[in-house]
Image 1: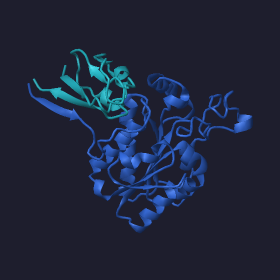
Image 2: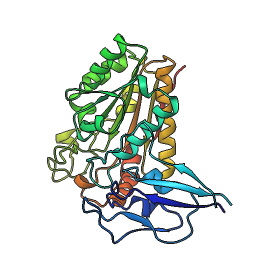
Image 3: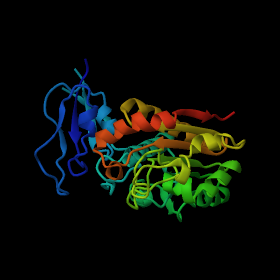
Image 4: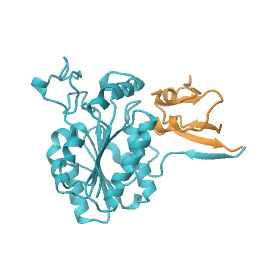
Length: 71
Length: 247
């Protein structure tokens, strides 16, 4: 299984939760932090990302960058 | 361990946070358009035409030359631009209040003349920017601020299927309907948008991609619920697929 991780551009995120919904491995959640617009950005809170890009594909604010970890 | 970045913002998109409501699918479609422009390598010779509607500020987000047209008149502006400079790739990006209501004459005749332009048509079954009034594409029984008891065909008529209607014309090259309700649909939407631009680049005539979208704010739903509602209610009435292909 490939391994990956995501980075959320926190100032872009509007906390809509579509990435959390789209993630097949459920490794994303809405964080407790607050960005300058007052939204709580999404974050990857546990291991298990397989770099499938589904969260990034569904992100309306294009606020997710996906990395694949080469082993 | 080495890492490879496999997904990032398209180069053709500016680093500006959009004004769209959280969960609005405009952002997804903007990204698909920007990625298509990047992949064809035509950023320097592309002209977009923004509509009146929520996407009116699109020129802040897509980093190409842009016009802002009067309400519904984007295909007319695009026609002028393309006829004067046929070497440019010209696209319009219009909502259903813009294209299917006040702009229906422009779109029908631009399509009928086979103008070599690309139209991205966002159908979210409601007027978004003005506060959720009934659009020509509003579904039967759907509640909006101007049909609070649900759309009644005896009073308001039936929702218009623009893609099918334009596909009856002889001139258009490529007409398709897609959605962005789930990742699998997003992949297909990207293919359709690329095909539409390809049609224009190969000078095969008018191309239109209708994208079924959401308006969580005016539908009164959470973003994820809105995508589910779209899948359950809009796709049965507005079937997905390609209605016209270039010869």
